[in-house]
Length: 77
Image (tube, rainbow, N blue to C red; front, side, top):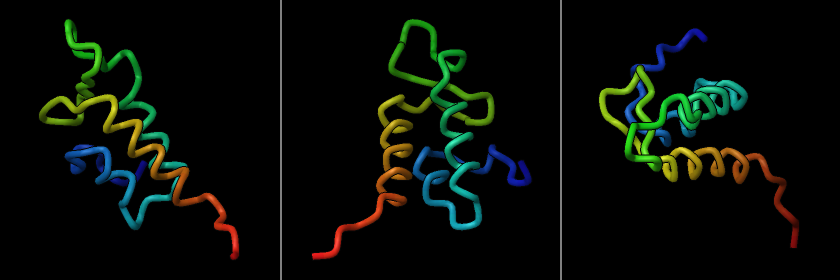
């Protein structure tokens, strides 16, 4: 990965980064969502080593969903 992950402060910083390929965005977010980054006694929080403070798993999943929404074809009306 050519971009240092530590520069991202929030999952949507990753999801909306203009120079990252969608696959890279998804890989970063998936690694953040991993159970290995779960905060002890706080199952809804993740603390990837690259981040200064924990983020909620819901924020990570919402950012991942935004990638899906971004790539979903629109229906013509």
